[in-house]
Length: 59
Image (tube, rainbow, N blue to C red; front, side, top):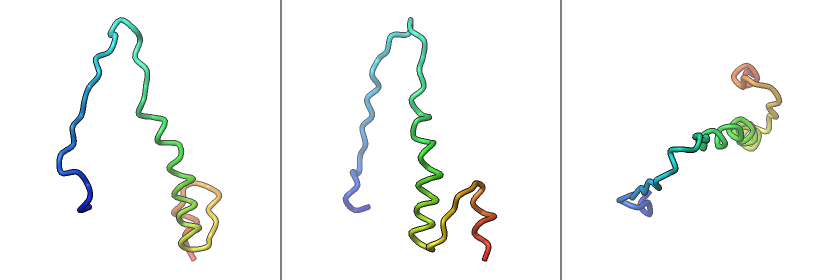
């Protein structure tokens, strides 16, 4: 955290509003469950192969 910038500047690039809008926020979401399952495996040695995860973490 000490190395994080104290100020963040955001630049909004003007677009062509005559064209249909495309999504850009969704592509980052699908990798989250596999990454979380791999992190659980790295921490516990238990492989998670189905979602939801909570039912598989019981001893």
